[in-house]
Length: 229
Ligand code: ADE
Image 1 (cartoon, rainbow, N blue to C red):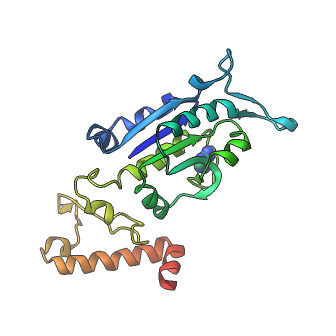
Image 2 (tube, helix red, strand yellow; image 1 turned 90 degrees about the vertical axis):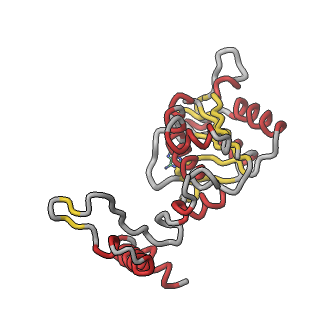
Image 3 (cartoon, rainbow, N blue to C red; image 1 turned 90 degrees about the horizontal axis):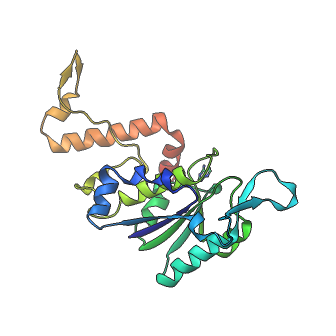
């Protein structure tokens, strides 16, 4: 999979992809993440990429020309399955959306900044608008990092034990069960006996029950959805 990220603050996107699972996925050539600095595509001599909003709205708006230049250039090189704009007024990201995106070959993620992008960018180029939650960040970069992380870890062979993505919280709409490691007894706080029993059927049953119990208690909204299905 190839993920092209368009930003006016590329340095914000260095560290999130330079460690652990995401770094290994790139080293193994399972995924390619290319961060493009929008300023490199500015079409005037002052390298201008934003301007005042027409109509007197406060705040700067990312201009269409640099974005159009870059996206058209990328589209000449390969076919993109989705061109995503990170924005608080997009559809709210969830595991289902991430699962679907992880199956694609090439995507572009555009990060907004300041007041956002010229609406014509959204009208002409964008195929999906995604929010990571009902709050406003200073720009789309951190949101793009969240989305990209969630996608990459689902691509086959990225996680060493593939089943660990399948047992994630939300993968079946249930919250994941708790996990424990050594020591079995920490200052009197015991690991549940069943996990030490070696009885795999009993352990599976315990996990399923506790997942349902946790979901009911912590996320009644999800639980209602499961009951209705
Ligand atoms: N840009 C600013 N806030 C955002 C959010 N909540 N989700 C996605 N992109 C954003």
